[in-house]
Image (cartoon, rainbow, N blue to C red; front, side, top):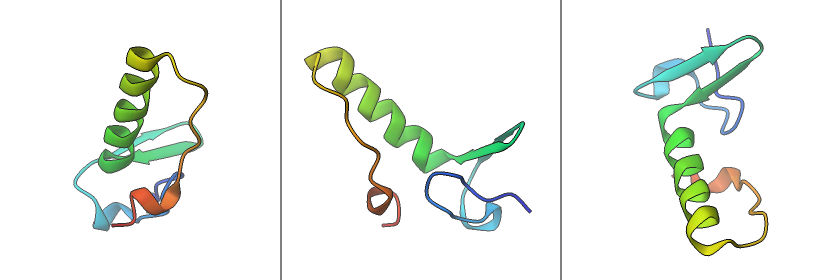
Amino acid sequence: MHKCDFCGKEQTEVKIMITGKGVDICDKCVLLCMDILTDEILNDSKRIKFDKSEVEQ
């Protein structure tokens, strides 16, 4: 069974799990990454760290 490498949720706990060679990411983490990238592009801010607690909600 696959588990998200970012938040640790199992495949059964999420709507979509994207799997690749040696890495898996769930739909919530993809959305969080999209938000981070959007903020980064729009604000040209410094690097933002991923916070696992943001997707555990």
